[in-house]
Amino acid sequence: MESIEQKKDMQLLIGTALRIGVMTACAIALASGIYYLICHGGEPMPDYTVFHGEPSSLTTIKGIFAGVLQFQAKNWIQVGVLVLMLTPIIRILLSLIDFARERDWLYVSITAIVFLVILSNSLAGA
Image (cartoon, rainbow, N blue to C red; front, side, top):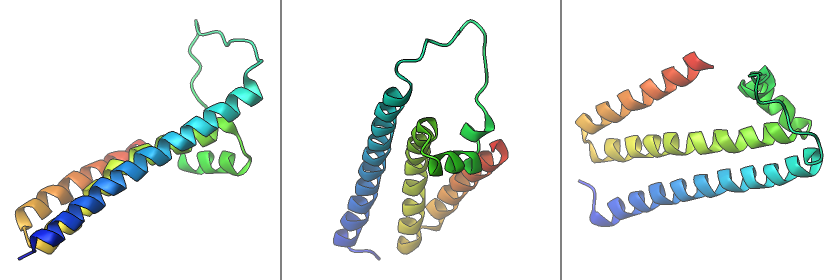
């Protein structure tokens, strides 16, 4: 049985992970957005009457990080989005660890199923 102090520590860890994840994602997106405006702010507005999909360099993990290494602003913005998407996934993993430490197997099972659904959807959609 877990003590109240250990439970509070885990809740604090989960809350801190969420705050750090969101703040990091926002900081990356803000800095990247400013960098994008510096590099491309003077360009004419694109024609939004015709849809043009994004290139794979912005929609795949490999493409995103290849662009990051080349300091492309759009790719850095995508990293901010990825960090924001990973934040709740980290929360799920921390909850899974917490439930396993408590030996609450029902919630371990439910949390593991949620994690596997998110993981399979993320990999299938990639």
